Image (cartoon, rainbow, N blue to C red; front, side):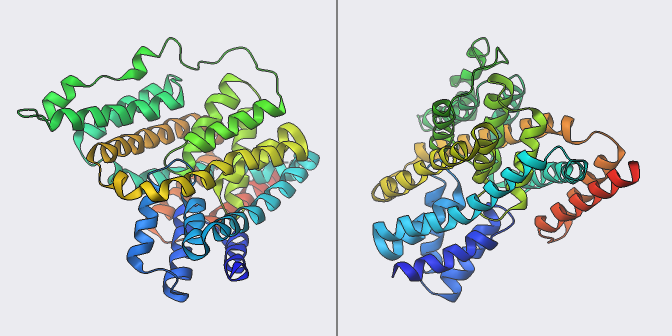
Length: 381
């Protein structure tokens, strides 16, 4: 039974390009249509369950399917087989980056990939926004949250503040005589009270393996929404607050996460290697993924109650809006480093148009961006 689970998830770990949405589509094809392990409704139920807990959606979907098929052993086998191939590939690229990253050809490749990453994030925002901005009230929360994120309000304050506001509004709206106006009047934005104490840039924090572990454990345990929201956490803590990474290194880490198959969260593997070598890569990878196994195992008995709660649903609506706001803010910040001239602006614009109006796989655009950057460097050099 475990071999039956391990083989398809290993294959997905080596070949699942294109981000969480593409991964989930591949799983539906493999385990619903081809293998018949789940019905379509069961698959949708598990997909909904992944949105109720923090962590990477496609990884948690793999863990759910493994548990559904073979209990606890299936849970471990599916998750590990999906994560480990991607982590090993990212670790190998991180080794090459540390050893050869300063060479001009590698710089040219990254020069062309970075604007494609900006376009990929913009496409994700475009696709996710209609489902998240279900009302004018949620759209208002999104605007306020984006401004707060740009002002360096702590990412957790933005996420949970948005969720609490939405839940409060739902609670007030259910009272007799209360409407949207009452909900708006009765709710407050906790982020503004935290502006003075928010995580603005400060003195550099000395690097340590324990600090690396605790940071990625926090991210894995608290991050809601798309894997791209990870960028907001990395930007705020590792670049702006602790100064462990430069803006350019962050973009390179994101690019590597895109150019490799499997979970986007293996960006942590790359960053861990940059900061602490092989030990740092292993620690960061373990820390960011281990909460997903716990949440899947712990949440399954609670799912019927959680899904039936209107307040829990409203809270999650708010968290999703906060996640979009963080994505929008970090895209603005990263664009300043990624789009540095006419060439990169053209790469970003063409990539965005192709992603929005065609069904092209983002992987091809990453390769094309790499070739364009390399060619631009050769011509310029």
